[in-house]
Image (cartoon, rainbow, N blue to C red; front, side):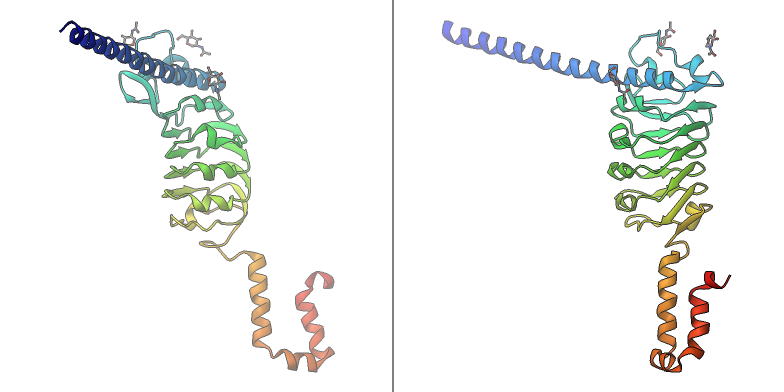
Length: 265
Ligand SMILES: *[C@@H]1O[C@H](CO)[C@@H](O)[C@H](O)[C@H]1NC(C)=O
Ligand SMILES: *[C@@H]1O[C@H](CO)[C@@H](O)[C@H](O)[C@H]1NC(C)=O
Ligand SMILES: *[C@@H]1O[C@H](CO)[C@@H](O)[C@H](O)[C@H]1NC(C)=O
């Protein structure tokens, strides 16, 4: 009897012990996540120039009640009383500066909208480590420059990627065509050139690619180099090469004029 009581007490002790260890672990990781999200917003606020004072008046970090950041302008949390940020929507607030790298510390973030501000500079090349789980990224109508980072193609949860109305240059990385969940992709009104990727999982309209100086390929016009090749193939197919060769100089002259117009000017 005494032995059994002893056993059950020890079991109870063990239960309490395991319980408190679990509780400690959970609360540690919980408060860690919260700290991290608060740091994220602090860092975003610090890195942006808030020309109209919206963040200055709304993002007040002095009130430390749990979930206080969930009332900030443009911040949505998973639960209103838990400081875990779900979405950040800071469209059209007169914000200036570079892409805020502090976003990396909002580790549960699924949506980031910084559209219609005056953000500039290139996007970080390691953007896949900053917005790993994001489903919607809207950076449209800013002044971002430089290339579209190849590593965006590692952000496999992206449904919406809006980069239109910026100053992005270079080619659209072909790897972006592999994004398996993409529904909306827009890069209109930039300075992009080269071949449009083959999007395997989205139908991209010409509108979403419009007004770039050198984009080509489906759904836009066929790329020049490909077009040249195919027209040469057509010429070779439509003329009998044997006859053309036999005709000699008489045919050769206009042909050389066609193929090397720069020589004649
Ligand atoms: C921020 O807001 C405070 C009062 O809320 C004001 O005194 C201060 O001038 C503002 N700072 C800027 C940079 O707008
Ligand atoms: C602090 O934030 C909580 C939750 O947003 C709010 O209910 C409370 O009134 C705030 N307290 C102060 C002093 O601003
Ligand atoms: C995330 O927060 C940690 C701790 O506060 C900080 O050291 C780190 O620089 C932050 N990361 C970014 C990308 O700002």
